[in-house]
Length: 277
DNA sequence: AAGTAAGGCAACCGCGGAATG
DNA sequence: GCATTCCGCGGTTGCCTTACT
Image 1 (cartoon, helix red, strand yellow):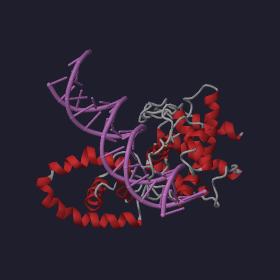
Image 2 (cartoon, chains in turn blue, purple, yellow):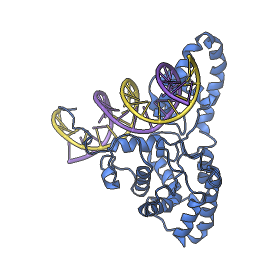
Image 3 (cartoon, rainbow, N blue to C red):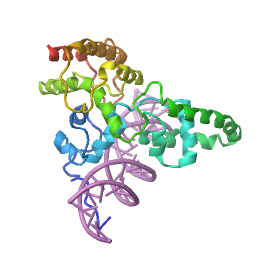
Image 4 (cartoon, protein in one colour):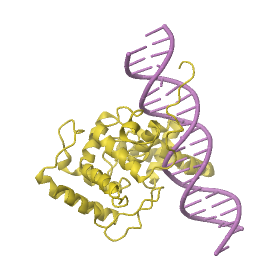
């Protein structure tokens, strides 16, 4: 490691703390277009006043399309407990067995729920162990063969090339939306679009299941929309809005720690239509 | 209703190891 | 073989929300 280590970035010149919607969009848009070959230079190239590490963390833990959000199921919790017995605090290893879950998330769940639960359940362990061993073994095998019905992006939290390609395919449909958002923001309507990366996993499943997402290799390069795809895109946006409850209920969009502005009801589709016509 | 404590989670920090020149 | 850079990981912190008094 040599003598001392240069800081990864000039902390006086980078922004810290919670990410804004605008920053998220910049990061998403940049990674979609160019990938993340070099986290260190990414923020500069993407126009972000952030440390590369911070970008990486934000992407991996929050913005990646295959991040599964929401509560852990009982099965997932049991899996974590079991894997923790095997791997200890190797959160990344554990995360690799839980599709859509990040090491950070698992770590948090462990410290906030499972550890306590385990200690309080110590008395029951003898019974539970016998019961769970069988079911966990089954689950492990089933997880490996079909990771998760609602998340088909693959399980590793590390961004393999394959995952990236799949992710890129997913983003094809978001690209115009994102770029248009930039335009909209420039006209002082930053709240107009909500990029739904905290979608219900079923939404991603919907994306993933769409044949129209199958692209030839090198799908990183921006793609012009095919005429025949427009209908599907429109359907997608409608589905998206319905999934998000944007049509009637704006109040559900408060999950993000920045307290994002709610999307206007038809903004996604309207924006897209404006863009393509 | 207000104040305080606890819980939950996103983000930061620093280290180790792999990759590179 | 060594120095350096970069990435990924695990530990930790601190803010925000919720529950409790």
